[in-house]
Amino acid sequence: MSKNNRDVKFIIYQVLYIFVIVVITMKGADLNLMKVMTEEEAVKKTYADSLKKYIDSMLALGLVPKIELDSLRNLADLRNFIPPQITPNMITLQTGQVVVSQTELERLREQKKEEEKQPENIEMSQQEIAPLKAVPLVQYTVNQVSNPYNQEMQIIGDDGGVIASVPPNGSRQFTMGGQKSVTYKVSGQSKTASTKENQKPTINFQALNSGSEDASLRALQNTVGFRVTIVDDFVGQLDVTFTGPVKVETKGNGVYDIVLKYAASKEQFERISEGKDSPFRASFTVTVKDKIAPHSVTRQAQYTFGEW
Image (tube, rainbow, N blue to C red; front, side, top):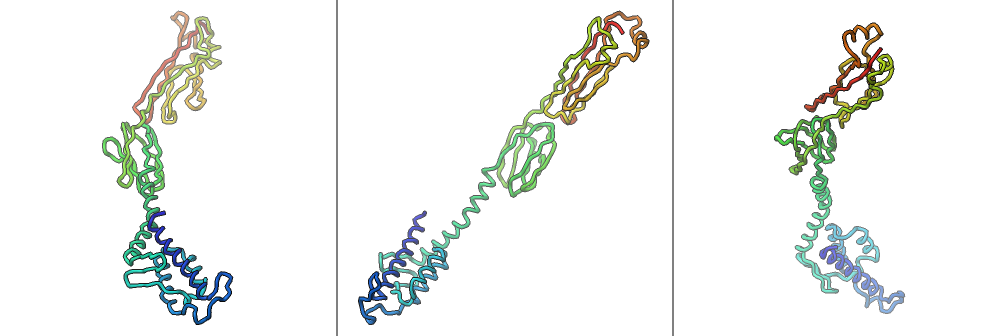
């Protein structure tokens, strides 16, 4: 609690204290309400209007909750109260010699207005500065950014161009290029973060039945010879092609089973292998290209067999 608030509460407590004393005196009795003086000796009912104006002015200034002043009014008839000394520029309470100038009351009123605005201002300041996060984006892929602020967010590349504008309290998807860094800007605040490199995809071969010098071509063509796995963070944006005498079975998530299809019959095998010595070999090629990034990877695998 600030010093000014304590001073105001002190004044209020003084008023309450005086009021209780006056009520007791006015009744001409002690705390058990037994009469101890004559009615003529009691305090005269003369200055109620001054006290009422004083209380109403404190209520209008918002220095105390209304419920406290209402309680004060209900203790007894205000006309029974001994008046404080009030001048145009100063309010003086006799008990405790507490003096509050009109200028001080005006200052307290302005301070209260500022304190009422302060939480909103602090909340807006924290919203604009504290939560400003620069989320690392990934090159050459689709990124999504959420904007938790009440103002538009701009994402700017290292070349100074605006990559995307995200609406207040919204989100947006956009495709990143090869920017090394991006800068987030919201209401004059900015923060820069480096981007993540989009790695090249890799092609892995798992030989399940790739044959041998004595292997039968007919047996090889009836089983899966290789399993090919494409490893990448963004498999969905890859183009994968297979070339060679093979049949490809897609398993999903970048996984493919390969079956050799070299010759459909013994006669066709003999025509293809005429003039050639065993063992025979048949190869196929896998090519992976990224639709957004400038990545292209190629690998080759081979079957071996010696007869039909």
